[in-house]
Image: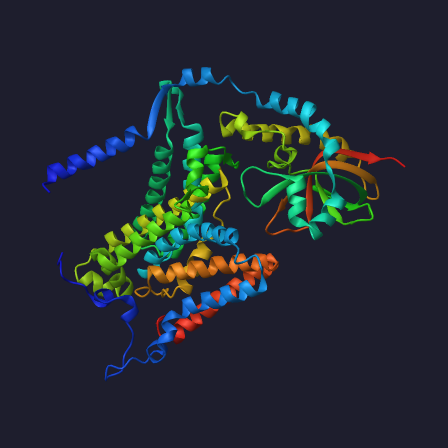
Length: 349
Length: 210
């Protein structure tokens, strides 16, 4: 494979790729009004300002840390979702994969594995249980990628199938009951503090840093953008598109597992119905963060902003005692608004 | 780095991780350390010695819903129990009311007006599942169990007792217009509180004769 080919969009930072006129002048709102580049941050600032005026609890430290803990899970999942969406794919199974990985981690930690025919009991340490959960997520993600590339199944369908399969496996593994009482060491992941910052926030910071490095500084990062920009051209340029896609879905599965382990640890319980509709919050974060659903354009940091907006919005609506039914309506409208603004800026083409 | 050395490093890392991840024991030794747990016996014992005597501490449902409307946090703190820190929490409640409807799966009851609040609730008579009764009592400590399967089996056995002993005599006699008294467990979501469709998993049910 050529080492120096960075075709299509892969050779420029995503934010710099915009349609231009014949004389090289960009037509987008962003170029005319540079402030539009920071629309997510501006939206977040205005949201926080409004909530701090409307609720005296919003700016309290305990509430802000609580929001950050909650957002951490969505950030992990959304980072994986961003990589997938950048390749013009989608993953609807992250919520179910999250639940299964959390349940497997908790189940192995609590009960181990019994093999009566060999009179053998295999116990798992916290490290072992976490690795098993992570491997499960990676394997399910890889299977998604394999099904999509090997059988040319649309990502929507393949991951929808995995959504059901993973949820069913979670029910089978747990018997429909929560698995609780996982021990203080494991609880530290979801509830502990390190250097004055909650551990889940540290985990999400590490995940984001690695993902930014992957997308900005590595060859595979450029390939991800290239495939989303023009898959056929990428293939003709010598990129092993199928391999890159499988890697991306594997990473997304692993990150869903990270989210599942964090949720399980935070609750000290693996719930069989954990993660329901998490995929929607994740897609919302990606879209609000400015990543184009048609692939090739977007950034990890944009998704982080999107996840924070979704998290703050969720928290604010609860603090303001808005009915859960209206909360869904508001969230839906915010997503729609984000897409419309994105389109008007020319990023979503 | 030469390939053989790289592969050797990979193997070393995998072995190191595996060594620190799992441990092996003889199954009969593990089983011997934890005598076979009889969930049915545990549930029966819990029902007779802890749950039934503890019903006197159940909160009046009408008063609870009134408090939830005005002092939600205080009401959850005072009366609810749950494992972990999730928003789903359980209450042990009691009340009286008039039966407004009897269906295959539930009995609808209009709560007697206690002066504080009144409303409609549903008493489950068919689908008795979940951990509401076990957790609402607040008298079972998960740390007393060596594994979660045993803990969950206790819930299943409690639900079996309800399906076998509590529901059948009530269900066979209850009819619209009856005045009933109940003790039971309810599940409420602290974040998304819904008080207009409360379902009660019954622990005791009486039809009060005029």
